[in-house]
Image 1 (spheres, rainbow, N blue to C red):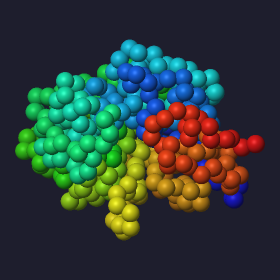
Image 2: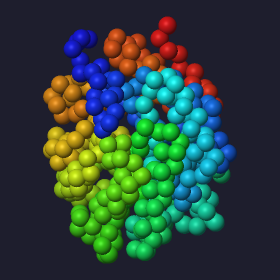
Image 3: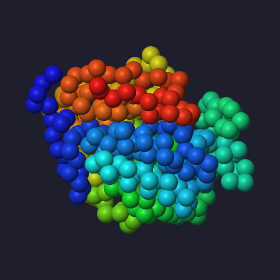
Image 4: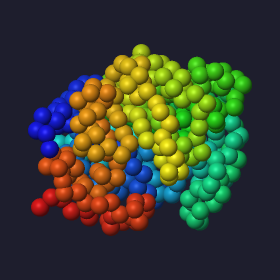
Length: 361
C-alpha cells in the first residue's frame, strides 16, 4: 500500500479538524430500545468505531411521523436525547467525533408505524413499489397522503427541533438526510414530486424544502457543523428523476451559500443488481457545492486513495466495511485483513453481528 495516502491526513471540516478522512457512513441497524431510545449496546457499537475521522450515526427520525422501520432511534423525546447523550459521551471519551443524521422517511412507512394509524406523508400521493417492514412483518406499501402546503413549515420545524435536540445530546454536528428515497429526496426528484404549488414543478421549487430545512437546522447549529447527504442516481425506494444532472447540480449550488461542513454524496445505486450505472459528473457536483465533499459508494482503499489524490473528494465514507471492522482506519492503513460482513445480522437483533466483530489482534 502507498505510504503517502491522503486517507490518513487530517481534514478541516467546519470548526473541526478530523484526524483522518475515513468516515463511518450512516447505517440503519434496527437496534434501538422501547420508545426508539438508544441503549448501552448502541453506545458500545459506536465507541468501538471512534477511530473514524468522523462517525455519522444511523438515520434518526425527527418526529413520530418520520418513523418508517421498527426499532430505529429518534431524536424528538427527552428519553431519546438522554439515550444519545450516553452514546456521545462514550465516543468523545474514546477521542472520536460524531454527527447525528436527521431523518424523515416520508412515504417509506406504513399506518401501523404512524401516529394514530394515519397515512404516511409525501410530496405527492405516489406509492413506492414493494413492501415495508413493520412490527407485524412485511406489509405492502400504501399510497401516501400528499402534504398540504401549509403543513410544510411544520416539517421544517421537525428538523429544526431534531437538530436542537442533537445539540442537547452532545453531538459534534448533524447531517440532514436528503438521500435514498426519503422525504427530502422525494421532494427533490420529479419521479415522486408531482406538486403544482411552490414546492413542485421546476427544480428551484423542488429544492425549496431542502433549502428551508437546512436554513432552519443552521439556526440551531453553526453551518460549519451541518452536513447534507444526497444520492443523485440511487433508485432505492422507487426513486427516479428525469434529469439528475440538472436537479442535483442546482441543489448543490443552492447549498453552497450556507458554508456547510460538507456535502455527502451516495455515488452508487442500491437499486436492481446488474443494471449498468448511469453516468454522472460528480466532479461537477463538488464544484457546484464549493466545499468539503464526502464520497460514498462501495469504496475500497485503492479507490479512496485515487479519488482523494485526484481532488475529486475530501472525505470518503465506508458502510458495510466499517460495520464489520470496528478498527477500519488501521486495517485500511495496513491493507487488511478485513472481517467479512454478515448480512443476516444487519437489521435487528442484539450483539451478534453488531458489537462482536473482532478487532485486530
